[in-house]
Length: 330
Image 1: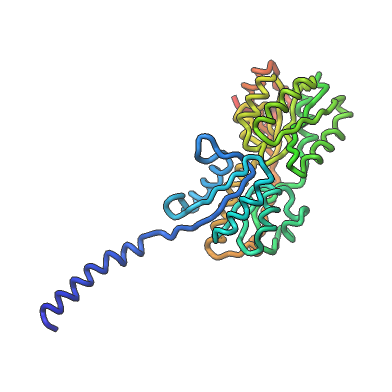
Image 2: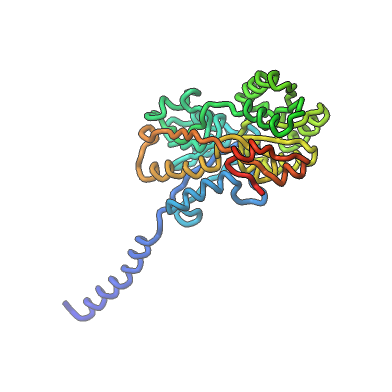
């Protein structure tokens, strides 16, 4: 080989090698979608549930802006927007779409039979016909299913134990949530034996939540039960503030509501459900099919009390409740 040919070949190899190494080092970016009825976080960023999901993804080695891109879609409590947002995501050729709430997963179920869907939390996925069974979900949907147990009668009992003179309770419902009428029926069925009257107040927007608490006060309610609802789940700070403003002991299923200042929560840890959903996304990104991934249905119920809120409302935490609570926020 001539000297100049050798030098040219060596130079080409040296030039090509960094390009090859660079190609090997650049991580593959996975594109997924996330559809939720909750409101956009303010300031922009992640809310309690999406943050929990991203913690789960980070724990598995996925990081936004590095090897993961997420198309976030928030319906801001407007359930009528879910179909349009679902259509946007389905048309983006995403590897997985993650979603929260029965209404959202139903919309996605109608929008695609091929794109893998991971449910962070929805009520009774089997009973609602979204999956065939927990062990073999079938189709393109899997994830975590909330137990089909209405917490509201127990929540009513807890409010009564906190305030024995309680005689009227308002139930906050979302008219766009088809499951909420059942919540009202359950509370109304449990109320007579506790000597409590029930009034319903409705809201589907942040402004309407303000009006609902004003109406509860006008109706002489002595406490509020927040119906389980994906939109309400993201309004913890607003609900807690209104509860203190109107001096209404308030209970929901969401622990972050208590952290924000509501009196109590009794229900499953939906934020933790979101963190666990990351495991499903990881397995699908690595080649697993949703139909082969069993649906998880955790059964643990959390009961948390905010002692600062109790003091602000002039209430003493009954010993029975303090002992049975999983946590008392000081």
